[in-house]
Image 1 (spheres, one colour):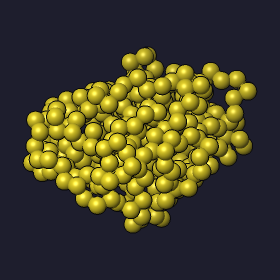
Image 2 (spheres, rainbow, N blue to C red):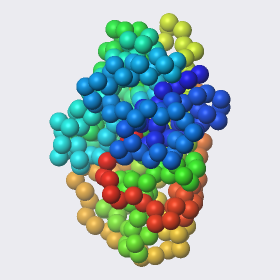
Image 3 (cartoon, one colour):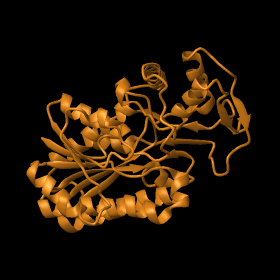
Image 4 (cartoon, helix red, strand yellow):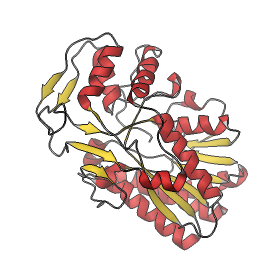
Length: 336
């Protein structure tokens, strides 16, 4: 099977490309390389394209045809919350115009299966164990762009015969291979490693939450588990009969939580210690605990995460140690 992967040079996208190739499928990458890393996808066909450009739908249709693509996995997007607040119109263009072009090209080229990279950000300030039927009330332009993207995918699937699944990621971390590690300092694990590398104290926002150690609890899921979920979703779409609904949204997490203090201490222990973490006041809007309900994805796809927090932290630190002065700080935007 030939699978067109937009944003395939990004953190999660490159893991999916590697797994596709390992099982004998043929990934074809479309990426503008603005925030991705070319070396992650060495050996795979690459078409450099800005999906938000005016001519992108026609060019993408051409690529789908000449590459004889059977399916699409769409990662390419911007994902920094703060930047989305500062540049909401630009975020809408990048995340929604780009998606519109992908859907238009798929319809024109007659390619039906689509796995869409969404986010738990669609749930906004939800707390506790969050199922797919929880209210979708995103609190920032990034989250709203992902929810609007799901709506667009669902409408296009119903109207044009596409078969689509949106995957709502929780907190993705770790590395399947050191060279594919998360290099952008946007999430907790690389942020802590960056401070450890600089000899600075990690920062914890709030230690007075109603949780076992007083710090926030989140659902951390290994990037390889997330990548495997994409393959499971893709296979279900490719092999589906007419009874499958045109679009469904599924949570991708572990179903259990780890506290920020656990993650920080686990990273400090693996890297030789360093300064004790600094406790700062709570950030506005941070719920005490957020964990994915994964019953629906397990029932629908037969998928569940198999790697625990230790495996996430071990792989992240191994990649950090092997990369030299490692964590990219120049860019504060990221392919999904």
